[in-house]
Length: 94
Image (cartoon, rainbow, N blue to C red; front, side, top):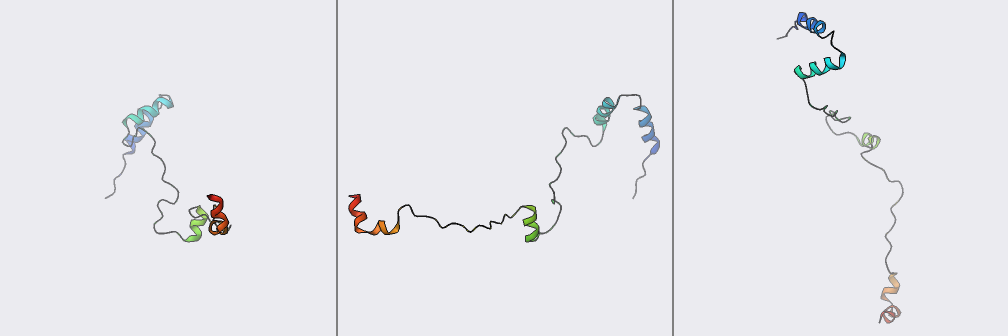
């Protein structure tokens, strides 16, 4: 069930790479390492592994929901309502 690490092999590698400059040692270890990668993968976003839905308060704190406290303004008409239906308004257009 459990695997024991062979420490002799580990210490042998430390002694083997001790004389090599650190930059070159990192390159050699990266080329033969089991977990090597060509680029560094990005970190997972904050709160990514949290399961379930956050509460409304948590969403507001995290910035998912932005509260707009100012009341929305009523849309204005392009032409005043009274002017559009008045007989004077029709006469002026013709």
